Structures are given as structure tokens and as C-alpha cells.
Image 1 (cartoon, rainbow, N blue to C red):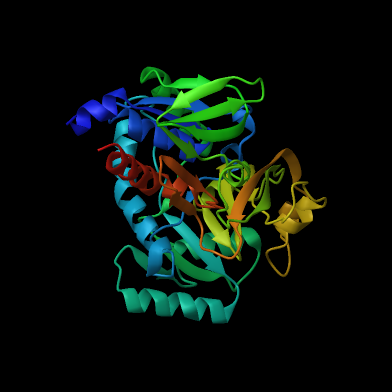
Image 2 (cartoon, rainbow, N blue to C red; image 1 turned 135 degrees about the horizontal axis):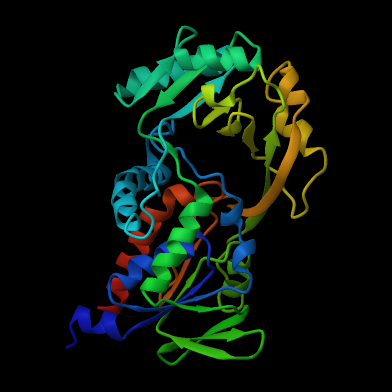
Length: 361
């Protein structure tokens, strides 16, 4: 009987989709000695390039079920991944803390209850006398913002993360094919992935990480009863030409009434993102993304959009996010991460690696 090590070293894995999830899976599997090929026709257009990179794990209020288990595992794994990836980019890091704020008294009471019941030292309530709250109230010209702070959560720059992953993948000599897979099928003991150019790529296993299109490939061979909805998220970078406002006095990343705010410099910030159940971006995005307070501060109303982008995420319809299933015979699907692809990537790749080891041994 062949050993697990021999089986892993000889096995070839095809990963369809080159976003954060696909790349994390490729690195995790390459560490096992597997031969890995990533296939994607338009790498720079996947939704990972539109992510804001906020890692909302410890402040997640539902502390049970699969979703919390994945978040908890990822929170524990991320420091190990950062140490590993810093060999390829010493500046890559998770900026902490992360702050969640609201102007709604009822929602604030729920945050208070959540922190009290969990007795977590990494979570604290932010009252009006907090320096964070004072600076935010001053900048946004309001008086009723309150919330909580998580010293364990934060943000990782998604563009820097993707560049670092690419550098690591090249070092690991991971194969990359810029092709579109239109069909997959099982032939004897191998999988055949067929490109639009009618090229057949053989592998021992296939991992589908290509968001919405993953279901189409599965439907061609089985009936998985999986429906994914497109959720378009728009974000923008805004220039503030106001000498009296110093955006660097604000926290590095925070959320007010569901809108994420990331100051980049003294007069520049990122705001995002929308939830649009469409594949075409809506208009008047500036109004939607800046309408998170009863009254907008004057400097925000005068702000100019210097950059605007969007990404199409996939959200499972009628079942929890994400979709992580092993359809036996070496076909795995990892998609439907909605807004949590970066956060859950470590736990996802660990699960995939375990599934593959169980299959090959």
C-alpha cells in the first residue's frame, strides 16, 4: 500500500478560480507536496480585488454554529499565515483594532449585552467619553455615536495580500493557466477539465472556487440543489479638501451603521461597500455610501471621488454561507463566501487539505 506522502506527491490538483480562496488553497496544498494548477481566465477581475479586507471575527455576535466555528478557527490561524507570508512581504500585517459603531440606541444595547455575556477581554464598549468616539463625533459633527472595539480584529490590505500570495505562488512554482473552464467530467479515475479552447486538463481532484460559475460546472454532472445569488459591492476613495479635518485623527478602520470607513491619509478615505443584488453597478453610489448618518458633515458632502471600483460576490440562497462541500470522487466546491472570503480563507484551506488527505489515503 502506498503511503500518504507518496500519494500526495504524485497527485495533481486543479483549482478553478484565482481569488483569495483559490490562492490560499493552492498554498496550503503545495505545502503538502501536491502538484497544483490554478485555472482562471480573468484573474484581476475576480471579486477579491474589490474586497476591503476587514476581518470581523471576534466581534461576530453569533457565537455558535458552523459560521462561528469557521471564524474562530480562522482567527487562530491568521497569525500563523501572516508569519509565513511575511517571508515574501515583510510589511504585510493585520492592522488592529476594528471598531463597530451605531447611532441606534437599541443596537447599542445589543452590543452591550453581547460583550457582557461573553466576558471577552478583547472586546470593549466605547462610550461617549472614549477618545475614539470623541474624535469621530468631532469629525462627523455628531454626538450620538457609540459602539464597541475589538482588539483582536482588524484589516489586512487586500491588494497587498494578493500580491504577496502571487509572489509566494511563483516561489512554490504553482502552475497558472489563463483559461476558462467550460466543462468538467470524471473519466475512469481522473477528472478532465475542458477549456473554451477545447484543451483537456487531467487531474486527480478538482476544487471549484470560481464564485458564481462554480454551480454551472457542477450542474453539468450532478444536481447539487445549490443556488448562488450575485451581490455587487461598490466602494470608493474620496478626496477631502478641508484643512480643518484631519482624517488621520480617526481610527484606522471602523464601521458606522453598516458602512466601512478606512482613512488612508489626512485628506483621503475609503468608504464601502454596497449590497446590490445585481451584476451591474447602480448609480448614485456616492449618496448611498455617504448616507449613514442623519446629517452628513459638510466636508463629506464636498468630497470628490478619486477612485471607484466594484466586485461581484456570491451569496448562497436558502443555506448558510459559505458553500463548502465534498461531492465525493475528488470534486470539492468552496464558494459563496459573500463578504468573508479573506477572513475565512485559512479555515477553508485547512478544511480542503483535510478532505484531500482523506480522499487520497
